[in-house]
Amino acid sequence: MNGTTEPLLALQGLALAYGGIQAVKGIDLTVGAGELVCLIGANGAGKTTTLKGICGLLPARSGKVRYAGDDITGRRPFELVRRGLVMVPEGRGVFGGLTIEENLAMGAYIRDDRAAIGQDIERVFTLFPRLKERRRQTAGTLSGGEQQMLAIGRALMSRPRLLLLDEPSMGLAPLMVQKVFETIIAVSREGVTMLLIEQNARLALEVSDRAYVLESGEITLEGEAAKLLHDPKVRAAYLGETA
Amino acid sequence: MDTFIQQLVNGITLGSVYAIVALGYTMVYGIIQLINFAHGDVVMIGAMVAYSVIAVLAGSGMALPPLAILAIATLCAVPVCMAVGYTLERVAYRPLRNAPRLAPLITAIGLSIILQNVALIIWSRNPLAYPQIVETVTYRLTPNPDGATITNVQVGIVGLSILMMAGLLLLVYRTKLGIAMRAVAQNPQVAGLMGIDINRVISMTFMIGAALASVAGVMDGSYYGIAHYQMGFLLGLKAFSAAVLGGIGNLGGAMLGGLLMGIIEALGAGYVGELTNLCHLSGWSDALAQRCANDPHLAVFGSNYQDVFAFVVLILVLVFRPSGLLGERVSDRA
Image (cartoon, rainbow over all chains, first blue to last red; front, top):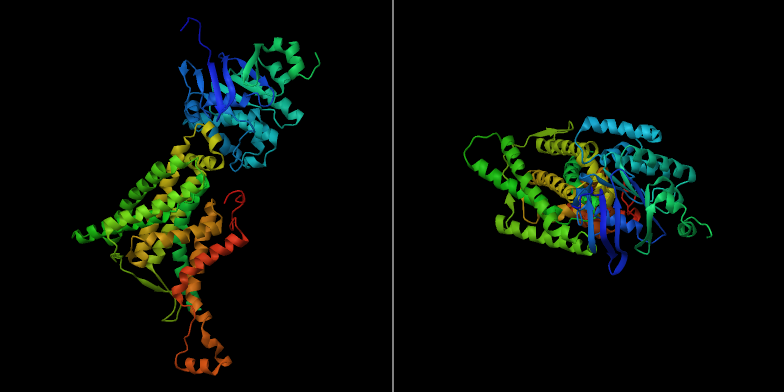
């Protein structure tokens, strides 16, 4: 390599398409170890598609995904989880028919250390006491915010190195959004690297270290989140302010 | 009353076998929404393999106790059927996982024909008399000397079925693999994001279903004393009907549906002759009265119509309760 330490995640000219429709047109993006990076953009800009391309749900049309020093382009999702790359999908995707404990157990599917798994479940319960009260209920009975907490808690159960969060605030009441973002900050402080995708640009920029702006499948702006927060173009386009 | 108890005993025996086979249909449906129409033929393969092993062991002159022979035969049939189940999924269904739903369905019917023809080549087209190595012991259930009875074979079938169902429930609700199976059934994409190898879980599901099917095959062969390369067809259709009756995709539903299906069939077979006996109408017609004076049995439908009941039940369920007795979320699936 070039002497400097390689970032944990690096997209190099990654292009993704659905059939003939180019959704992501060759983007470069990096996430360094320990960083909290967000990718913001309007509906349909290609944010979720980008995440799908990273975690192997969608094959790359061209370009590369490098993770922890290896080319992981084309790897299947379950293999990447074993290497610590975990995604919390959009719409939460909890298993509604499984109990909360079973959902968390599935998060730890790749692990065999039963005692430590038990400790981690307790840790998630400390983070989200609501889940502890309902540990034996099926996840389908939880509210949207509780399901989002379960989805994040479940992802933590695999002890990820890199967490991909897809629209964690979507469909949540403002109070819940606040709570979810507090959790994101707490998890980030524990040393988990995160790539966060959000439509709520203000919140995302406030908690992140760096940010990328995606427009029609191309990255149009990037930089420190605090700077983008005050960038007139960003303010006009994503923070609802007139320039 | 004796007829009723006798048919109930027969029905519960038959229903246990249906339930075990229905579980295979319902598990596969639950996880990939496929009706594996070749499942009945996996049952047949199990019966055939066990037949051959029993024939060899019984003819070898080794003085093995009958139950040991039966156990060895079953233990040989199980891995063979598991291999067949694995192969069906790996070779035929997996490449069609994202194809339109009609394609795997037609493939399943094709696989059923292939399995039957393979069996035809190996075991001939003749019905094979299952060696009656376990001596049948009959127990009277009522004081009446001609009354209802139960045999040791029936007790064995029901007992073994209950054990297997309990084992399956433990597996599905208490083990990591079982939870993973349910997770894949609910949302395969998210299950993949948990690090679950979906293909492996689906393979395991087919293999567990096939293992149950093989034991069902041995039970069916020992009960009726006969095995035939086409025996899986009707048995499979009835077990499928049982799974639909209980609510396809639902384990408890398959067990309940299988049991009910067996009981309905047995009671139907036991009473249809009596219920459709035209001699009940003797008072209406002198000609009929004369005819019935000599022979009071003039049934329109005899017990040879027993196979009809399963399908009458299937039609009624599809018309009045398409999601089955215990099914919930089937309306968006067909």
